[in-house]
Amino acid sequence: MARVPRPALGYAATVAAAGLFALNGTVSTLALQAGIPATRLTALRCTGAALALLAVLALTAPQRLRVTWRELPFLAAFGVVGVALTQFLYYVAIGRLPVGIALVFEMTAPVLIALYVWLVRGERVRTRLWAALGLSLSGLVFVAQVWQGGGSLDPLGVAAALTAAVCLATYYLLGERGTVTRDPVGLTCWSFVAAALFWAVAAPWWQFDAGVLGERVPVSLGSLQLPLWALVGWIVVLGAVLPFWLSIAALRHLPPTTAGLVATVEPVLASLVAWLWVEQVLSGWQVLGGLVVLMGIGLAQTARAAPAPTRLNETVAPA
Image (cartoon, rainbow, N blue to C red; front, side):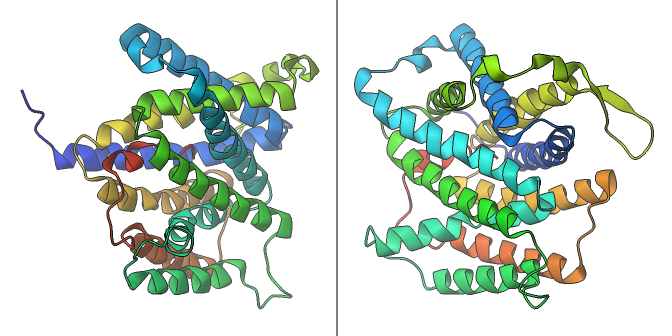
C-alpha cells in the first residue's frame, strides 16, 4: 500500500527538528562554557550519535549497515569533512559568537553549493542565484556590523563559522554522490562512525578526564544546576539522534526543497532560545542582517535549474 503524504506532519517534524537543533546550540554553549573543549565535545557528540544509530539500525534494519571496502575512502572523507569538522567548527564559532549569528554564517552553505555547481560543474542555474548571493553578502555585512571598527564580531569565530559553511556545503555535495548507491539513513550512520573514529585519533580518549562530566554546572539564570553528563546526553540524544530522525521522517511528507526552506527557521529559533535562556542579545542591525541572509538562503535553495537527485536532500545535515 502506497504511503499517503501528510504535509502538515512533515512541516511539524521539520520545525521540531529545527527547534531541537536550535536548543542544542545553547546547551552546547553551556557545555563549552563549563570547560569542555570544542574538540572533546565534538568527539562526545559524534561518538554518542554513532553508537546510538548503530544500535538502532542493528536492531531494526541491519541491511542498511552493509558496506564494501571500496566505499571506505568515500565514507571516511564524508564523515571527517562533513560531520567531524563541520561540528567542530560550529562549536568553535558558538564559543565566540552568539548561537544565532554562528548559524546564519554556517547556513550560507546553499549559496556556496549553487556557486560550485555553476562554476565547477557547469550546471545551469536560475538568475535568482545572483539575488541570493547579493542578499547573503549584504546581510552578513549587517550581521558583522563591519562599520564598527572593522566588525563587531570575533574574527576567529567568524572564520570558523564561514569554514563550517564550506564543510557543510561539502557534506551536501558528497551526499549527492553517496546517496546514489546508499540509503540516506545508513550513509548518515556511517558518517558519524567515521567522525567518531577520526576524533578517537585526533583527541584520544585516554587524554580525557571523564570525571569532569560529574561536575555540576548552572543551566539557567536562576540556581538550577545539572551534572555535565546530562548536558552531553542531551547533545547526543536530543541534539543529534532525535532531530536527525525527525528530519528523515519529514521527507516522507514534504519535497526536499520545501523541507530545506522550512529548516531555515533554525537560526531564528536559536537566537530566540539563546536570548531567553542565556541573554544573548542581538542588535537591531544583526537581526535585520540575519533575516536578509535567510531570504538569500531561501532563494539559493531553488537556484539550481536542473533538480538534484531526490535522495541528495534526504541526507540530513549534522547541525
